[in-house]
Length: 219
Image (cartoon, rainbow, N blue to C red):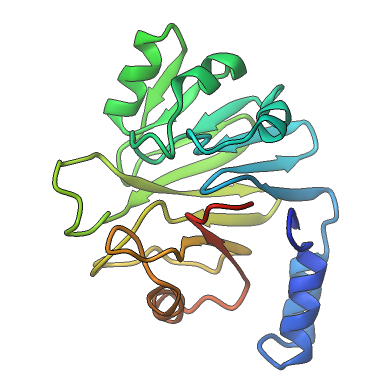
């Protein structure tokens, strides 16, 4: 995948290769398909593209006007949970595409007149040409009201992106990679991983590809 926003995937991969974090074969494997890209939006938003397939992830209340324009024309939306910084109904209505996520997210989408399909951890669906698998995600002990929360593994064109959703505290059994890209929160503040906790999570995952820091105020 190419990652657009602050840095391209090539920038990140070549930097990791230069300092010995990945070998040449792994670098070439990640970069071999130039048709795929990920666009990082504000906070926890993403757009994943592969040819005609365009999938938005977590377009929430912090998504800015320019990013909202970039979301027009996506074929599907993945929403990890119903918190407002990940789910903005007005944006979903602008997009008008099917919504996938936990049952309480999809219920909100259907109430707003949008199509949707609920996914529980372990379930999978063909989403705009990509294979999407929902995986468990523990938002952590600071969340006082229960919320249905899940991550997603999006596989398209032989590459995979693991979107962890908001996470804090122990996570139990982790999904099996390898992954081309892992999008993990880094902001801290008890509701999500801090940078050091995210790094420890990635080590536990055995991830050797690209990591994207999410749940930040800027794209």
